[in-house]
Image (cartoon, rainbow, N blue to C red; front, side, top):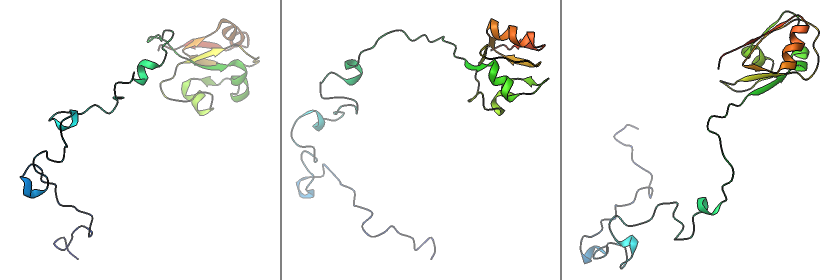
Length: 149
């Protein structure tokens, strides 16, 4: 077998429909478009989302409230989670939180919340921290550093 022998399977290719080539072709006069109407004209037809004049779905659905385009979303980590997964003297940054399975996704902002207790020192580097979380970490001898977004 060579490239010269290759050809498509039997029946997989059809002859091109040559329309508008006279009455003898079987596709003359109206060129398979029928009589009159929007689809018979050149450039005629409707876009795929057109619903026949019915009120479109996007206009039928209610729209409520306000979506703030500047909203900043944080992934939340609690002090008790740090106490379970890290040992004394550890530096807890975003990468360490991802490895520990506490944070998922890329380019996330992390906020530390104060649920739970901790009794050993950690250095925590996050984007935001609640007052109670900061107090608990500092009381245990650690420190909280805020990262810039």
